[in-house]
Length: 231
Image (cartoon, rainbow, N blue to C red):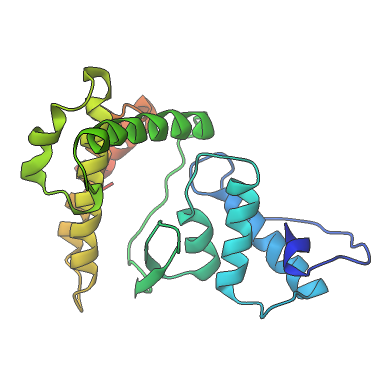
């Protein structure tokens, strides 16, 4: 992938990679590793264009997702490669806006439970896209990006029963994201509200998409019981 950007290694290195990021814990350790590796190779051997965080993120996404036909998006690579709190347009242009630089009191908890992230993502993404295609086939100009919550029932009749939960989840998650974006634009975002939105999102993961595991659910319940705003 790097050769396409004019980065051609002409000598070898002995490289040792160390880190304390939990592996296979759902915190994008694979993307973090690829970002670091791409950045190293670009700095060591140069490129045909200016090396920027955006370029590193773009190449890492193309290498990890596009080249291998993986079902993931580009959120991990751009969040890690660029940093800060981003709102990312996951469309063709992959544009982004920096909407903050840190969230105080954010804790990562590792369950120790391994799961098939790629397989799970691929299955849920495929079903959501199929559900959207059913609606688009019957309603010209349908755009899930501008759907309102009160319109869900109107479109639900166009979708097979087994795909309805995935359409509902796609609509709800998009609305949650829009609400979070609106709050992050405030000078002092309301952390209680953002925590509530996180809880709403987890509810969809757990009860609609059914992709959580009991240990994580217990960890989340314990966090909320101990005073966390959201998990």
